[in-house]
Image (tube, rainbow, N blue to C red; front, side, top):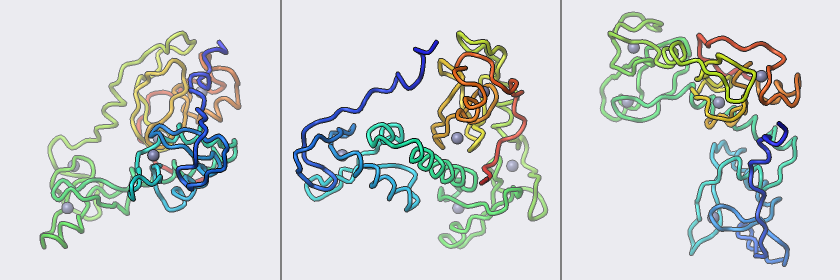
Length: 262
Ligand SMILES: [Zn+2]
Ligand SMILES: [Zn+2]
Ligand SMILES: [Zn+2]
Ligand SMILES: [Zn+2]
Ligand SMILES: [Zn+2]
């Protein structure tokens, strides 16, 4: 089944003879063409994207000058990885940073149902959250429940229990009730069809051909069967895209993984 390797599904970079749209250099060398149409040197590209990451950006965009403005077109991480010809170490470095930012952001922030601004929750066990912006913008105290996003009802602060009717963790409900499926063409049977990403907690439905799935939120590729990162799963048993993992099939998840920095 080697020919099903995911790497083969990725298109190869397209090189064109052009000036460098990021630096403006015209050295007569080939440049890699990006999805927005601009072209640059792979080294320049990786340098630019690394500087974005270092400044805490989660997304990559094109800085090419278009009539005095930035092109601004977004590039996916997959596109950057391919066109910047990142080495294995650089990829790992990029992916760790992306994962860390995404996980931190999605775990600790939610949109306030009243003023729609992002509110940070410092205490991950506390469901009762006060929106600071509601207070400073409207002068009113607005508290809501982190889980059901309804105005807060209940006692105690901090509180792990909300008194709103039907308040439950939607994601856990989905995980508890999702269908089991046999992964197509695979030895893996009765696998939950929806998993929470082991790195950032985002729910993902299995749509791939093989057991490895790329999380759209934190970009970490993980194994749908054993829930290890694809890298670890492959390291313990290589070439097993459609076969059992070294570890056994992980049962339905009963909690959402919380990012931990190892
Ligand atoms: Zn561009
Ligand atoms: Zn608010
Ligand atoms: Zn609630
Ligand atoms: Zn993720
Ligand atoms: Zn696995």
